[in-house]
Amino acid sequence: MVTTARVLNWQTASEINNAYFEVERSTDNSRFEPIGRVKGKGNSVRINNYSLNDEEAILQFSNLNQLYYRLKQVDKDGTYEYSQTAVINLSTNHNLQVVLFPNPNKGSFTIHLDGVEVGNSIELSIVDMMGNLMYASTYNNKHFAIDAPFAPGIYTVLVKVGDIQKSIRISVTE
Image (cartoon, rainbow, N blue to C red; front, side, top):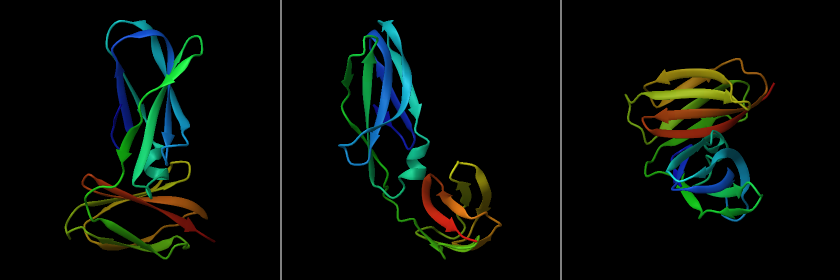
C-alpha cells in the first residue's frame, strides 16, 4: 500500500473470489477502525489498481506524527486476511509553526506564522465540522487578523504554504 497525505493506493496481481477491501486506520498501530470499503474485482488474473481518499486524515489527526493503515481483504464467502501495516508520516522536515490567539474567541483572532519567509503566498481556509468552507483568503505576510461572523462552534483553520499544510482547531463562542 502506498500512502500520500490523503490518498491510499494499492494493487493486486490477481484475485480469486474477492468481494471487497476494507481500509482500516489506527493512531497507535493496535486499534484499527474501518474508514472505507472498495469493491473488489471478484476473479481476475490481471493487475488491478485501487485507491481510497482519506479526507479526514488531515482534519482530525493534525496533532499526530503518524497514522497506520491496513487492508482487510474479504472474500465472497466472508473469509478475510489482513495486509501488512503501512505507516504515513504526518510530520515533515519543515519548521512551520502556526500560532492562533485567542482561542476560544468570538470570531475575531490573530494568526502568527513562524518558519515562513515574508512574501511567501499563504493560503488560509476555515471549515466547519461538516467540512463546509466558511472562509478563504490568501496572504503574503506572517501576521494577520481575522474578523469574521462565525456562529458559535468548532472550526478548523487550515494554513497552506507551498506543499506544507498545518491545521488548528478553534472554538468560537457567543
